[in-house]
Length: 273
Image (tube, rainbow, N blue to C red; front, side, top):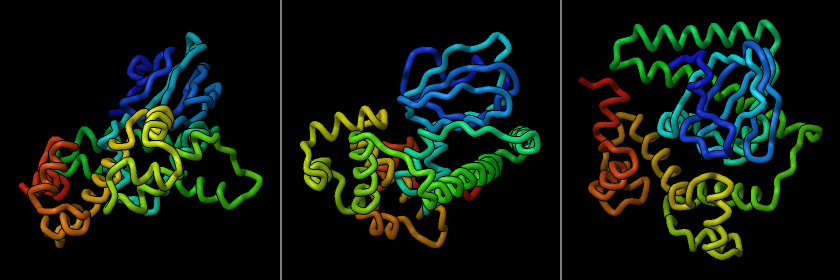
């Protein structure tokens, strides 16, 4: 799970929507990484955190460029988000524009130690508990970025401006966060935003690398997983709280989105063998 070979970075010189995100520290050399229209030259002691589904590229890679990094796909990232209930949609746009931070030597060393812990846990833990242990570690990692986001949002000097399409995407995500339990059709959100469903679909695909339907489904899955983490809530109750007509319809939706049943997911996260 911890890499030092940059050929494993989910980036190339051509812009593409990433299937995997990553967090890493530049240890030597330089390169330019661009996320949508924001680019940074990465140099030693720069920490880079790029989320899945971002439009990204890397160029101007020096011969001695190197990083130590870990990767996470969309499913793992959604599992991380499912336990961080306070995350708001504008956090994702903040991360898009603030994907690079420069660390002191001491901070860089702590990141290297963090990678050592992940590497150790990944290789030594009982497989039944390993995934959950790594999830907890990555939640701590992302919580630190969320705290930085909150501090920046409370400081007028650190405010940032979004484009019109970004504002539509943020407003759509906020509406979905509020209404996804009862409204899963694009027409509802397009009407709330006073735009056509076709234009909303175009904007969300461009800004998020996924369709509005996929984004709505992501919110539903995050909520379901959050409820499944509580062993005291039975599946019938989970279906009721997420506004599915029945437990079977919940199970069909969950399997379509994740490849496993709610019961299988619950057994995995609670290590029931």
